[in-house]
Length: 227
Image (cartoon, rainbow, N blue to C red; front, side, top):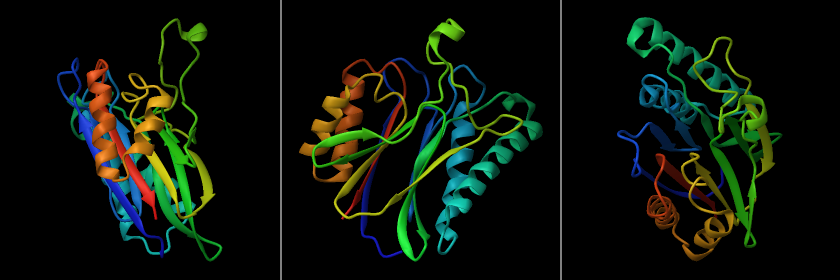
């Protein structure tokens, strides 16, 4: 992999939750956020299992999109196995979303992946685009807002969405749990990404704004710069 990457990550429990059920990885070629399912047992355990599985991608030379899908499947298996080993963990689940640098057809490419309602955005030329699709049932169907339709920790396992993008220098990516867009508008997110050239500073400022705006949920942000 020849791309030059800088990244920053930040997280906060927020003002309402008692514990932070988000987990993140900002590693070598893999950047991801997992949001343990609110209302489920041990969401923090599930999210940590997910990012631990995804971190294994660091050790795969010339990673492919198939490797990403395989690790997501293994993460689901690991969560289910942990619940079998410890019945107190039964019912735990997590989202998983992120960005992986792979080698495909002789070139570096990005794989964007998603299960659940955490998100990946791309910011370039001052424009912010959401690259993932939220897996959430319409309110009209459920009678409740924000019911996630896909999550790790289910049997059968969920189908992950994967998108492949050319890796182009000058792009900035934002990976976040839903605690960020819950509190901060797309316009304000784009403004922070434009005003903070350092990815760590940008991640910390976005988390700060989400907490100040209400902090109704855990919030975790990873900012990735392809230079």
